[in-house]
Image 1 (cartoon, rainbow, N blue to C red):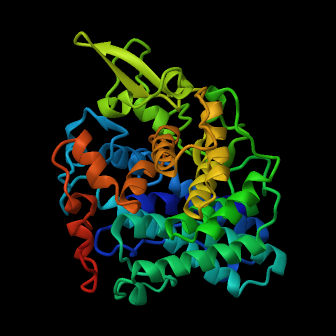
Image 2 (image 1 turned 45 degrees about the vertical axis):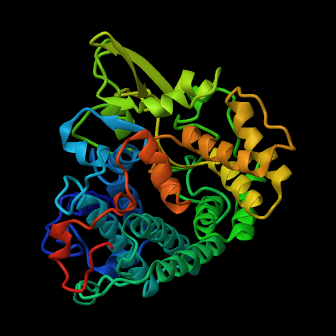
Length: 456
């Protein structure tokens, strides 16, 4: 059937995005089963399969940009957790160079997903499908495109703003400023927010709805220091009764979690029973085996007494007579049926976003109220409403760290955007300087386009 053929093509495209040639960061070979664009977008089911193929490509192989790699390397670069494997030492020691392992994937793979989205948007623009169908899939593609640009610009600062699938154009583009990229992201998300329905397209939360866009917008506004807009977008999500802070922390990362705003489902045929690549990577194969990912000592020391996040989201193990703690948000290495999905956007972050946005606007009591929602769920003493703003600021920084630990590089980006990387990491990791917070573009990527510029 036509739909099945395109689904297979989507899987093939996912593989090509992951293991594509270095000759060009957007030069991706078309899958063998690829149908002509005018046919691919003449049927709603085929168009849906093309869009689903983007999500598949983001989470179908281990140790790729959107399937554990970004979280792992930025957890190591900050003070979340580190790997015992030497291939990650340069991230742990903050000695990243243009030749560091895996660095090329942090650039080329997001651009691969963007290129896929560009093709979908272009195909739908000339498609005979109904306006409703075209709006749905165009909005999803805009959302995913904006999501990937958010990470690219926060990783590498100035990046090319590619909005066409024409390789001859895209591979000769110079970098756009971070301000230009943010303007593009915000516009994309506003368009997507308008066109996406409030209901999820399926019974699960693996494709975005309107509130998923609002949640990402809230984060983008926060990073862009548009405090009132961040407050409003976060409030839009917090006011939706479908989302809840779950009392049982062990339920947060389940596929059925009501804290989930947007999740990715792992699609893999090579390793039976994989639930998430984080779980597969971090959880030992045997319950009594040692782990290879350890929480930094300084982070362990920052937990307050009775913090449920330490009890439920970390797991101790002993080796060589010493006790270490491994990250344990994802608890399943392999299991059938699947119990866990990769959590991309979740409800707790919206309280933290709104708390920071309120604090920046001088609404300290309201900011404390939101932060206390997170602290209450963690089993901690609530902050008094008269707590000084400087103390609230530090409490918010710590609770963002411990709440979002290991998830999608939050800690790294928080320290960099608030100018706290040097004072914090120089104390907890030793010799950390301002230059260490700039992640270089991989040397192999720079060879693909003479107009690319190394990160400062």
